[in-house]
Length: 188
Ligand code: IMP
Ligand code: MG
Image (cartoon, rainbow, N blue to C red):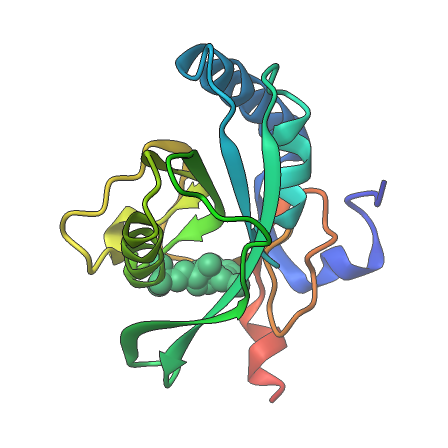
């Protein structure tokens, strides 16, 4: 794995969550989901691409006959103004009628994207839907009634990268989560 003295780490101002802290939380979350879904076979949905690294670690901590699905979505609208409508870029391969669904996200920010997605999956007849997120920025929430069922870390309102999260598609492969130096986006 990449060492924290590595080249791409030079673009961070600080490391916010270490790989050890992540691993411990993911283990704990896996145990919790295993307990909460006893006797069930949930469909775990990875929201691409940000959720991919977290997802592949999490599923290996769950002792249940789960199935995996991958979905890619994007929000309509400009960067500053989200319309709240989500465009499905890659849909599920199987239907979720009467299934217990667990949505796995990298980060909940405004909550607009997840709120729309949850409504869409409810409409498809899922038996239950829960939301799992690696990171939560509660200060940024714009959706009042969005329930985040399992969250690993609450973080302040700073732009973070690593462990799946990107800036302009880069930094997803950092094993730790860090705050991106403003120097990186000021270059543009
Ligand atoms: P929202 O909750 O609808 O505002 O959108 C959340 C999405 O915004 C996430 O899935 C990420 O793709 C992206 N995002 C929000 N905050 C960050 C961040 O700090 N770093 C990287 N991506 C972020
Ligand atoms: Mg993203």
